[in-house]
Length: 162
Image (tube, rainbow, N blue to C red; front, top):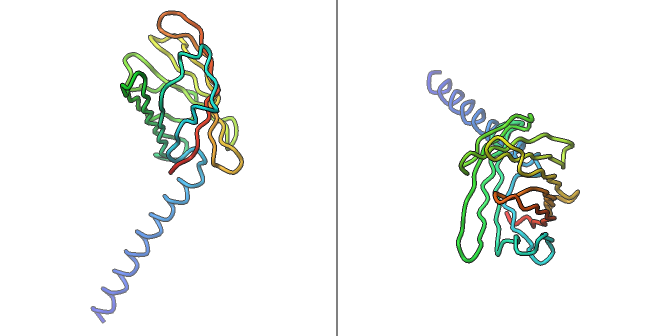
């Protein structure tokens, strides 16, 4: 009897862990933003044109329901920089790895987020992130002002690669 009870306990523990893992996997897949995204620089539009990166990769993970972690690696003049943040989709400011920079996200719909980026507590950029219906393309439309006070805008198209 004791051996049988231990086997049932082990099976129950295994099933519990499997269900928790499956639940995490399903919730991550339910978020269309989750994945690895690569900039299609030939399709994307940057104004002024010299603000376009040579290459850009973004990895988005779902930490919990209503919270994402985004890691963006950008190459300019063969030099890569990386920015990372974890933010809720609640409109509150969250710190980034960039000095004195924060981001705030609001979920507009299942496939659209609005992001506000602040630098030194001043709004520096607004952006709308939209994932296509088939989940294969992320479009980010940005407008902002750089550190020197110069206005810029872009429509960046990212293909899902992972």
